[in-house]
Amino acid sequence: MKHLFYSIIILNLFYLLSGCAVAVVGGAAAVGTSMAIDKRSTNGMFADQGIKNKFTELYFADTALNARTHINFTSYNHQALITGEVPTEQDKQQLDDMVKQITAVNQYFNEVDVAPLTSLMVRSNDSYITTLIKTKVFNSIKELEGGQAKVVTENSSVFLMGLVTQKQANQITEIARTTQGVKRVVKLFEYID
Image 1 (tube, rainbow, N blue to C red):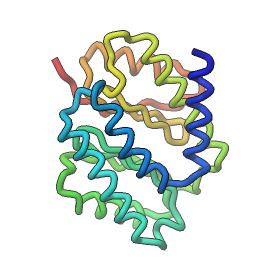
Image 2 (tube, rainbow, N blue to C red):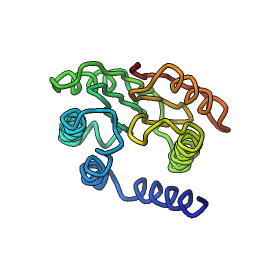
Image 3 (tube, one colour):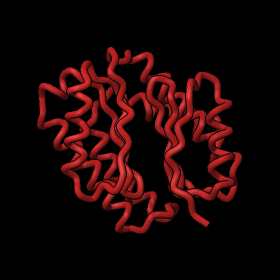
Image 4 (cartoon, rainbow, N blue to C red):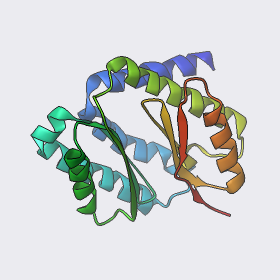
């Protein structure tokens, strides 16, 4: 278990240091490996990857916006979450406009802060928090399958997405809320029976 934990941390650090282009390619591969343990339909998983790819394309096409911002984009079951930091409200609105161009998005949450960009140290800590929460969640909630829940951490705020029962949502939220270093928890779950 300890070996797996350190491997996850190393992979997260590699992601942070290698740039977003790797994330897009890696994301496509992740869709294939997670199909067997995900509550979404196969079409839903591919749609989410398509949503992410389209946003990435739009975001990197605007080189000026890309150069002055730090953005993370997550899609789960046609819901989109944007986190990160931008210098102005106008930049935040530009991100909204990008998401509105993606017809497959049913609902989106713009949780971007108008603030200075976070440091590599803060981002590394966010990856560490995410890893801690995921490890605790999947070790504690045996009936939860790997692809059912997403944990996104941005500047010590934790965003929780997924297709879960009310009981699972409460358990995941409690784990996140009590994890050291977490400032706030935002639930964006969709509930199943």
